[in-house]
Amino acid sequence: MLKHVFLIQAHKMSNLLIRILKRLEAKNHYFIINIDKKSNSKDDFYRKIENIHNVIKVTSFSIAHGGLTQITTTLYQMQFCMHYPIEFDYYHSISGQDYPMVSNQKFDAIFEREIPNNYIQIDSSEELTVWRKTKYPKRLNHYYLHDVIQNKLLHRTKMFSILSHIAMLIPRDKFTFLYPIWGGKKLVFIE
Image 1 (spheres, rainbow, N blue to C red):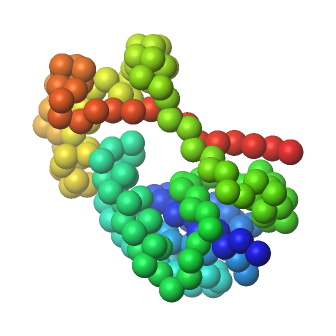
Image 2: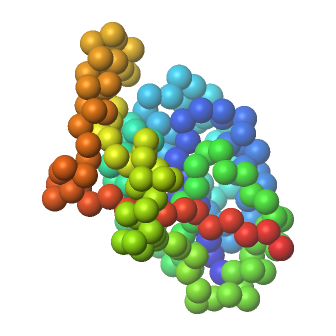
């Protein structure tokens, strides 16, 4: 039986995360979970996660959605799993709000049948050029201070709001040498 590890990043709705974990819970499914440091309900998350089997690590890094901190947290989770005593066959990066659409039996059967395929899509340079203007302009074309300044109290101030709006006026494409931005999407399959 293939071993799956779910790299989960959650920040709200602890009850939904527990429903997801219970739905995914199986002897060959493992979990590494990051509860966003800025979450107002961290204690609630931790208390509820205690009863879930195969949770191998819980962290609390501060994450800015879609930002560099989300990538570094995912990389940390992957690195942790690569050094874990179990050799995982598949890594699945999901949010604490991605509810499984199929049963564990169907999920496992799909991967047993499809091994060694990977389910990752990255946009080509041509798609990115088009989609930067049509599909993701708000998400990809601007700078967001939430990713640079990780302070929940500061985020609530009027000054931070003003600075965030000013930063969004700086077109990211003028500074592509700093951070090349790629787009993509998660695979969704229903049989």
